[in-house]
Length: 456
Image (cartoon, rainbow, N blue to C red; front, side, top):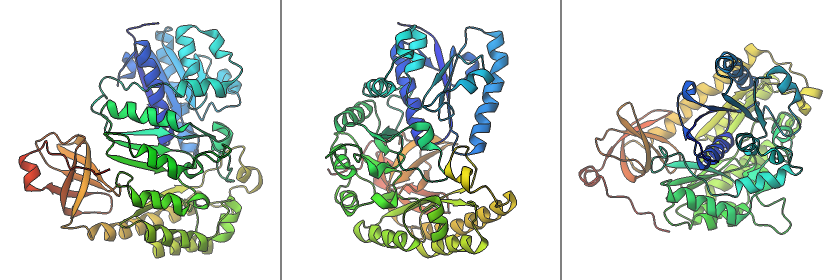
């Protein structure tokens, strides 16, 4: 079916949702729909939702409520609710609350929307959602026209779902069991994206270093990285998010060996106290995490490391929080994604542990870590002042080109030239905790079309 309609996609949450929205867009582009940034101009509106925290779920409910008036004034408007709010186990309660929503789609599955638009009822009633989801994800990605040769960095899922249920996490209940995608399909998708102008790929999984664990004698993430890194035209390759328990020396060595694989590791610790870690079902200790960080730094020269922290987990005492603070002070990591604990219905923590840390105390701990990271990362970045770093430029923001170093550090450069998609050596002239500023070296300022060669 061909159409001249327009679509708008609202995406909340993690990079996996961003990748899922990309697949919805690709499916709609194949049907002839074209993307619009203005919801008021759209014939199809997709809300790709997140429920990892209550605030994300509240935003989705708010957006849904705002669409009621638009639906009443335009009954032909197609509204698709997708993602973790829908989940994989049914959406009857949502259909009752929002009867004006036309389609409900599980995470990573554009099938129900495409079936509705093409009136293929057999697709909606398919018995095996896993088989259908695989078939949809195995196709070539088609970027929206305005993103071709403009989208510099893209995400490619390699593990769908999760089978390791931390007590605080709702993802396994909403995205289903862990499922690794075939190597050939992943490589095909990466090649397709690179052919449309993408220079950097990030491989995604809820626990990405468990890639292949669900397949008897299957591949692992290290072997996948080595294969994908050889795709012609790919400048940079990344992966996230890892779990400490499956971060092997083989994986770290793959990063160290291949110049296309960037030296940045995301490996969440979540807390720095062993009792809290046990209550979270993280299955490692503070000491083991400290040893892992040392091993990463030993194997990968010039590595940067990111982590996730949850403050105010049920039962976390001030002394236990101090253990987290002290561990971060000791390790001096480059990135710390901070979150205040939010009860998620259905999780083990919600059923058994309650929520006994006040919101005020959660905010206090959050701000202490925020201030600590601003200081630590500011000191790390200050060491780069005057140094020359390789930056891949993505876009222009408020008159300055924006790009990232191999270690994901944000760099801004003033230039009248078109730097999009180029990897260039930049001398750092100013540093702060969250970004840096730099200048093009003279030879590249005079010749903006010269790309830094990345040896394979």
